[in-house]
Image 1 (cartoon, rainbow, N blue to C red):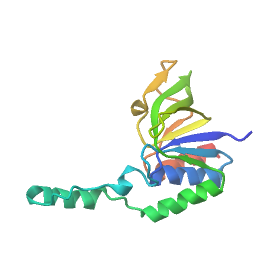
Image 2 (image 1 turned 60 degrees about the vertical axis):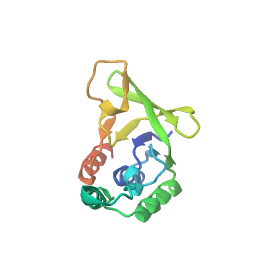
Image 3 (image 1 turned 45 degrees about the vertical axis):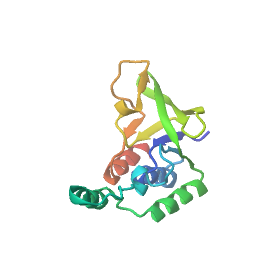
Length: 166
């Protein structure tokens, strides 16, 4: 049976991690995204239409600094490739809680924001672009570090992680 990795976040880094898992290992990635957008929540960042005074300056700065560095089309293409190779992507999934035993995370409970359905995603490895404290852990241990939980923030970070996994 192939191992499964749960990845929280379908932004460029989360999708890149999922693609690297498929390319370098035999681990199946399952990507969970809170928003309904491939590419993360900043992919469709909307700025208010009230462009006057200081607001106009802030609107321009927000557009300049908070637009994604990779195009949405490339994120959608990457997501399509991930699904073609056997990975799964779920949108509108809000992390409800994470479960751990000893020094390993064993599953993540999420709520589908469209239907209100509570789903359990068990896995062997867990990746997140968010700190673990923001994922609402329900820990059955006092361990603060987990052997199978990885925080990914940028490309250099996940390249180092995959060297240890493969």
